[in-house]
Image (cartoon, rainbow, N blue to C red; front, side):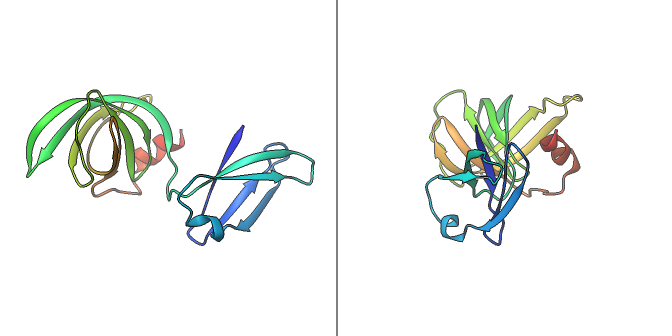
Amino acid sequence: MVEKVYITNTNMATFICPQCKKTLTVDVSKYAQMEQTVKVKSKCSCGNNWVSVLEKRKQYRKGVNLTGIYKYIVDGEEMDRGKMTIVDISAGGVKLKLDVDRNLKPGNLLKLELKLNDSKQTPMQKTVNIRNASSPYYGASFRDADLYDPVMGFYLMS
């Protein structure tokens, strides 16, 4: 199993042994600016070996399978709509898959309507900016993201 290790804003990463839970925090600044995925092999003093992936994202991402509707917005007007699936979500944005191929580009706006798969089936409406595009998958950041949204925070940690 590969462990995810998050890089802090000071380029430090804390590795946790999956077996004995012993921790070691190290400077990983030489890896922080690399574009490709960085895998690190670790060996604990307890004898356990494991592989970690350095995660450069600023926020935790939760893998999900949330379906909903997107609306493509240009100059405040709805130009198109369709079905979408959110495949991962964080406090700052989403990775989504559209039902059909669209030629969306970074900077395009979408309005998303969905329900979280929590116990309350919480409805959610968010406007997002497309940040990267590799159709049918798109990375998008929430406009006016409230990083302290208690509903989103609770959902991400559940």
